[in-house]
Length: 284
Image (cartoon, rainbow, N blue to C red):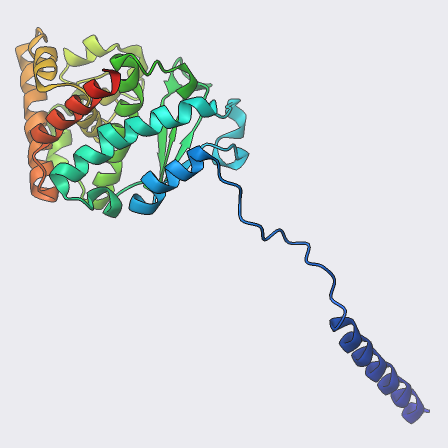
């Protein structure tokens, strides 16, 4: 009886193999879409100016997984994507390459920018987030639909964000000297939003957010230096009433200058000059 059952099992096995082989010769049409994506003129321009030379993807076609789903964000109008990309190209990438070497951004850069049209309101504080960087490979820019690309101050909003977040990325490659945070550590405060920029400057921090912690202090110094002309930056610092606070900020400025020169061979004042020229040209 056992032999008979084993014989039946063997026959079923042979039949299954034959049927499987027969089915393999009748494969239906693939259900996987292998057609290349349709590219519009904007996609082609972005690939030519960002993807090909710098391996940077400008993500503007909405993917809910690219942002915080609890923040009620939305994609930017397509008409605003090229202008903000121009700002990145002319007033960030090209100046860095001019002073740091033609491959500077290609070597050290976020590999994706995600563009959001709306404001990113923070639920637990009276603030909005203008941009975020994730693991040094991605920067998200918010409120792009509310920028006036004919107004230099409006253009400087995303630039401040990019300079801030990119300085964090540079710090991940070359850490800052811990001595920076010891210049005036007493007034660092997680509730920095209770101060305005003028209050913070009288304590020796270039912005209110700079007074939150030393790492933010450093990148805010970089951001303010690179989105203002030297004359405007000097006027900002010289307008501080407290001589002690002015000294704090000038000492921090000197450390930023040394950091760029020693770690990357970049004259930050030359970089500042080129970025100011580029920003002015974008609105003229």
